[in-house]
Amino acid sequence: MIRTRMATVADAAAIAAIHVASRAAYYGAHLDPADAARDRGPMWRRLVAEDGRVTVVAEDAEPTGFLHVRLGETVELVGLYVLPELFGRGIGSTLYERFDETRAGRPAELEVWDGNAGAKAYYAGRGWRATDRTRDGVAGIPFVTWRLDL
View 1 (tube, rainbow, N blue to C red):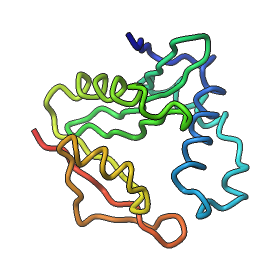
View 2: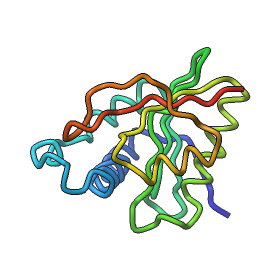
View 3: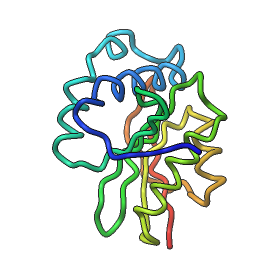
View 4: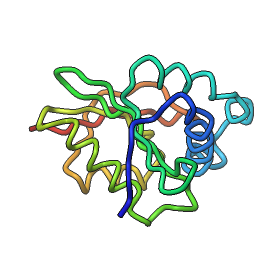
């Protein structure tokens, strides 16, 4: 059984490493080297400390995946990341179950980089639908807002 728990500030470095590895996997050659080299540790320390809505999968000592949500009338799935070498082991599905519990039937939104075919298939398979809202993205490929209704 895969276990989840709320993240603590002590998890920030591991969360940042998962974030960096995942971004490298889905952006591939499109990832700007300067952006890839940016230290994401301070951002994750702040986010975990401030909003407290970061969940990690930590089967061993270090987290192997994480979920970040923002609560509101519409729940925002800010990020769901898993170490790329652990794809297909149920970590993302377990985190998604935590998201669904947190959402509690409320509508939800997320952004998906339009070049990430795996993420698009993953969310479409769970009932999410792309909207017509976009913003500038990596390598000229936009981020698209997806929505999950009641």
